[in-house]
Amino acid sequence: MKKDFRPSQAQLDYLNVDIYPHLEEMGENVMEYEYIISSIDWYNWDENPRWFVHISKLVRGVKKGYIEVDMICDTGGGPDCPLGITLMEWADHGYPCISTQIAYLGEEDEYIIEG
Image (tube, rainbow, N blue to C red; front, side, top):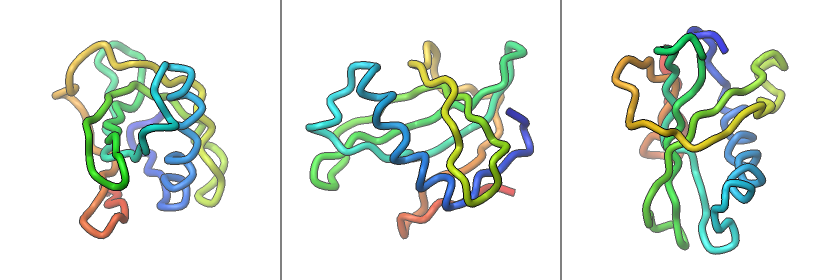
């Protein structure tokens, strides 16, 4: 994953759906909670480029917590194609302060994609 890659709004919409099977495999209760990506940051402090993804847990639209995962995606499909998740695992660290913000969820439930 390259630092300058920016997903499209469509790819982020797909990604919000594509995370569910991975979350279930990780032990998250996908029947009780809704999950939505709040923000994505790119980092590479250990020569292993990946995204740090902050995901909100919701019940009937009300935030009930959050989880943090590291994610690697196949970014070569084009702006209208889903990003294939090749790795999604628990982030075993806090927010990576040496990171580049990629996208975050704005007020209108649209993603703000950083330049």
